[in-house]
Image (cartoon, rainbow, N blue to C red):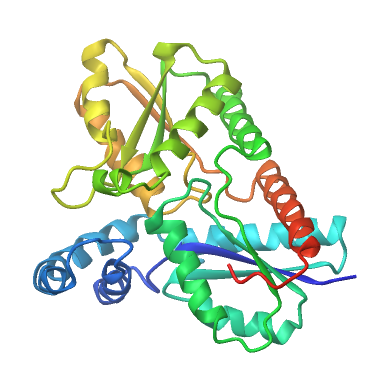
Length: 335
């Protein structure tokens, strides 16, 4: 029986909710040319003399609001996915899979985790960035970092990359089930906001499929939930800088809804596999205040899938499907 390593990749996190730790993290993250597509010389000046002077202190305060005794929510929740996925894999395919977790920025790094994979003596590698919708600034840069580290490996095992799973049936079902379970326990708001992380508008014009992926995920989820046209909105959050980003913006929508007579909203973030700073602080706290100040009366955030059983089962089915493909390949695929 062939042994397969599954490399889960998530964005990353500062090592501590301190200004110094956040500055180091942001320096690595924001210097990535796939994240910020501005001429390097100009961006170096902006980043070092402006962004890294003010933003670390602001972000550190935000991290402090959501930091847990176990550490950063993103890393803690990603580890829970790793553990749960390993347990389910052992239950269904004992000894066939070994699940690893790496961060694109910060620790554990992709290169260091690949060192562990190499020692494990596997036959195949399935690379699974935990981003359902592909974007150059998320999945794209994760795969680029993997390829760079993988290229240094001598007699490398076969690899297969999972580019996206935005329309995967099991993933959509897991999302729908999480929303329905929440509504069953807490009741249903007048409007469901499906909020995705934003990207600059120019990246879509350059051919990035992210907006199409978000739209398809939304359509499938709305259909599964049987929502009427006025019962949902697709929005985009986490805008950074002054450039135009894909719209509609989450904040502007929340400010406008009370004027339209919609006083209660539920917000779900289908692009986030785990809860993190952007969901727990920005969506659940900041945006709640914005909606209530605009005249809203009831605002609730529906948690990310995290290590929910349906989510873990969906990820394993995705891995199994791709593992069959890599095993059927006659030659090595470096992807």
